[in-house]
Length: 111
Length: 113
Image (cartoon, rainbow over all chains, first blue to last red; front, side, top):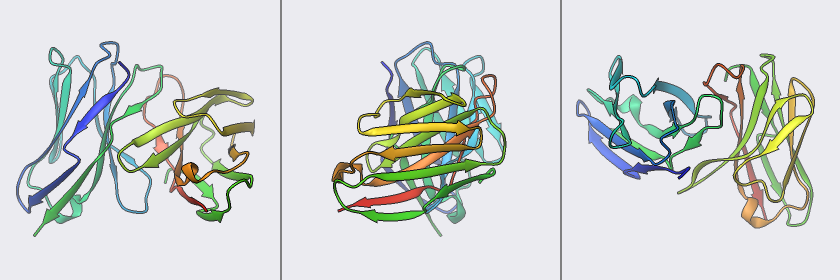
């Protein structure tokens, strides 16, 4: 019940396309859903986060879509750029508790 | 990397030897975490600390111990390293209970032969 399942494991997108990464969770007590971005040789960094009281949050080209009834959330990267090539992790937690991370998606954007 | 340093950045050691990894922060944040990152497993929590001398176990704590004698330092010790502990280790910090964002250090790559 503590797992966060992430798919796909890897994703190849052409420059200008839309990248979509999906995550699913079981624990309905989770109330904080962040996405982290990690470049090779670096630590993960917070990209965008959402709480379950909204269905969508947008920051620039990055959007989180949240479906509370389905217990799923996804990251959409619009107009994907080669500089977006990185590994992306979804995560979930209760606000006062520890983060549970998905297994990661390696995104490659080709020009 | 949000005022977090990890040392060493790379280490090669032999099975059975003790290893200590250090996480140092300049942010005076209360919470500190140790994760390991392995292909196919994402980031898994080893131990965490919610204050000086206050620590607790995470998901994969077997074979690891931690200590926090000062706010700024969080040490991870492998008492007797095994090949299964070959991994990349990340430290993270978090300001306080009300703020969820964790800030990660640059990582330590550990190879146990």
